[in-house]
Length: 471
Image 1 (tube, rainbow, N blue to C red):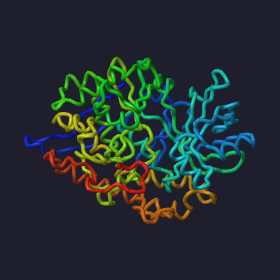
Image 2: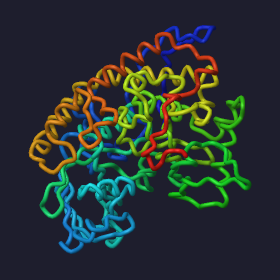
Image 3: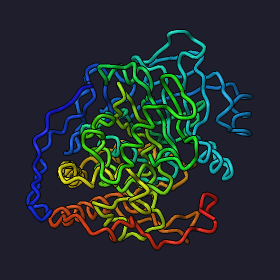
């Protein structure tokens, strides 16, 4: 496993108060950029990072993606956009032609929402070598195109990937893309690297481990209440599946479930520093559609000899786009030690890792570094917005109008399709407010009493119109 040396800049007093915290952590990802061709990253000053190798995710320009389907196939896909149906497409990705690519939609809930609204702008997964043996694009066999229809700025997912990467997490590459289907613009998408064998080979010394994708309820990492234990939402993406649950995953769950987690036991099953960085990035970004959210999940775990490393995924609703029924002030002030949608006890990774003083110190260091990255984000937002603005201004069929894009870059935006819902936080305004909140919290960071661990907005009622709400 590739690691980076870290000098901690956070000091805790004997009473548990954060006495000093500096953000001098190297802004270097744990991925091997030369081997992996990491793209999509950028400097905090808004300049684009150098590209170390050919990549489908260039940092220095908007990716142009041309998709071509026979007219009958496109009509059939629009009529029934189920992710279970696959089509053969011709693809030109950033000037490189790819023949007979297997194309399907992805994200069942989003597909349903878009189809019900009469939109044809679905997210897509492209499998390059499903029908053409050994066909790849700069070593990648699969590519993802995410339509950020919930984000009027189109920037949240790329910016979130960049922050995770800057914190040293093993993070899929991401870049902004302009996508056309049969010559017709579908607008701005986020192109995201697939987490698969090629990804693991580029990032880890050992790429023969076990890769799990986690969704709710297994994604909470809470112990199963059934006997024998079962974990719906735990998918084996690489490695041998086991029934009723894999032994290495059970060992992780059991280690986190201990009332007083043993450092030796936890570190035997978890890349501890990667997990602390993972939590710090999600907390800084107020990403409540992942592990910290109401339905925990949407990420990967990669196990090498029984030791797991978290890999982020599904970051499109970072920067408080998913509100967890919270009002705007509560999102801005999401507490450092209880950054969960609901009780901290229901998120064992948070409860366990922040229960031990040394681990808390390391978490606070990573959180301080993330806060300073947010503080320097304004030029990056402006640079990426300028890159996509010509496409946005010419786009007459987007979920949000060009005027909404401009407004949402800075100011809160009332949802035109749901004016009764909480407004979408203005991106730059939220980043500035969140930065100040984190700095304030870190300045007096004292481990709170147990009653503080109710999590974000504990009194918020369930939305009766939400099909996923509890009964």
